[in-house]
Image (tube, rainbow, N blue to C red):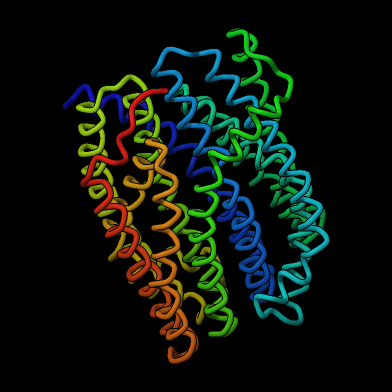
Length: 437
């Protein structure tokens, strides 16, 4: 047990640092932009939700690559493992260029579709258009990180992400206040940091591929194989992002205070989720490696222990969020109504953090096993369960703090419970435990 704990923590702790660095980008932007005004913060809420949704839909670039590389590594095929990773990075670059152009052109229509108007909409469009050039970098970071996780190297992404987070914080303050670019400066700082991170991580993977004899040229068959393997995870992620978009649409309908408060709560939820996801990353790599080598007993042991860690870590985070809510809120807004909304919604969210830890770990286990088809179907089912509850909140909940609290009770409670039930039932069986490379 102690040996397994050491293996889990050796992967999870560095992964935690790398994962937390990503939502820190959003938190820093929220803190910097929030002091420009409520309209700017509300605009950032819409823009960052759309941007994170777009990038999140492509998270299969990391997850599918992690599983594939880990399986091949477990089967002793190192060159094939790196070749799969290189092909995944080419896929990421191509997708990034296409999506950057689409985001720049469609930004006004996307913001309008979420119900924004006036100054809020203008700020959201500005942020999206200045962020668009960074999309290729963001997707390359996903793919390269997936390769390194599959190789059980979570330390390199940690150092790169930490450097990117620091550069983003310094750049955001400098461009927003020093240069006077406003919300556009915040977006430009993030874009620059993400592109720099992509260059560094890409160089690390390329060096490893050359050392193992893998080709650096794009292979159509390999790129297509990565796309096919990622398709079910794309559907699964789409269901999650649709739920998040539905949530921000409801927050928009509850008024500017609820929407601004939602940006802060959602940023802190993302920070907590990524922290818990570090255990899921460890589970992905260890489960993929165990299935590749055919060691089912080890796979079961990883499942049980990671779940125990996940629920315990979720409970600790819940206590921290509940206790710190009133102290955290003033960091993000001078508006007293927004502060009350943030503190109240964080208290509600904290109640469900242990369940969130369970859900994120099970997601990681099943992704590491390559069980994408089940996750796709389960994701759509949970969205169907959540949608009417979210619509009821929009129709009947009051504006302001109380409405935001009801919204987060629906998302963190009902939606996460549906995910916990579906993935928990799947993990009890053995159909997901397919061995071999």
